[in-house]
Amino acid sequence: MKLGVSTSVFLRQSIEEAIESIADLGFRYIEIWGEYPHLWARDYDAASTKKLIKLLNKYGLSSTYHAPCHDIDLSSVNYGIWQESLRQTIEALEMASELNSDVLVVHAGQYYPGDPPGGECGRGRVIKALEQIIRRAEALGVAIGLENCPIGPFSVLNTVTCFKDLLEDINHPFLGATVDLGHAYLNGEDPLHYVKQMGSHLKHIHLNDNEGDDDTHVPLGRGHVDFKGILDHLQHSGYEGSYIMEIWCPDNPSQAVIESRDHIVKD
Picture (cartoon, rainbow, N blue to C red):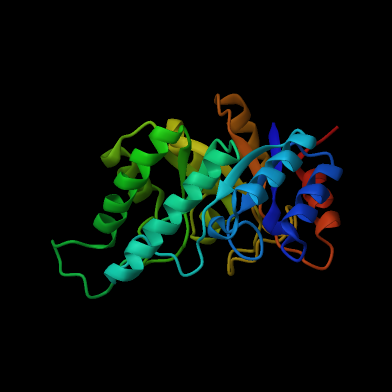
């Protein structure tokens, strides 16, 4: 199992300290959090990026990269917001390529209540953005992992069916799914059914837990997600991507990571 940790788990440390903390815990897979206070692509010049690459190489870390997501909306009806969201996502894609990351995680967005029936809607605006992102991704050799987030009834990806339909409508080998198991559970779907339905579209997994009522991202085992059946299925289904722990326990992140690892990795 290619088990790793997002630097967002150590968000109160610098990006360099977060990388060292994850490596010191024995992991060799890492997801770089692509916004403040970690690696916002536009804040890094060539020299800073080179130092970061050297640090990743020092610890033998294979990376994925999470594009900015706060206040980013590829479905936005506001053309200025849509353009900026697209621009920042492509900037993140360029950074992912520099870091030799094999997947860029991207959030989609939400429907706008004022969209006319039968006209352009949030889904169409997401597809328009993804078509541009994918062209650049293919040129750079970085896959896009579209995540089932944000959750809720207005999400463009609010069910596994609509998520799978969108991927199949675009139908490009450089676009697949990042399935956040906690988000799937919180949205009222069985995470095991979710990953089974995704099938070959699945590129990447986010691991976190919750009790079904809030997106708490607690350590694995503290919520109600049944990880055993999901991981057993993935390990026997030919899935070759990484499993990234994306949990939130800022008072003791290292202990939370160890606790989560122990919950799913048995001797």
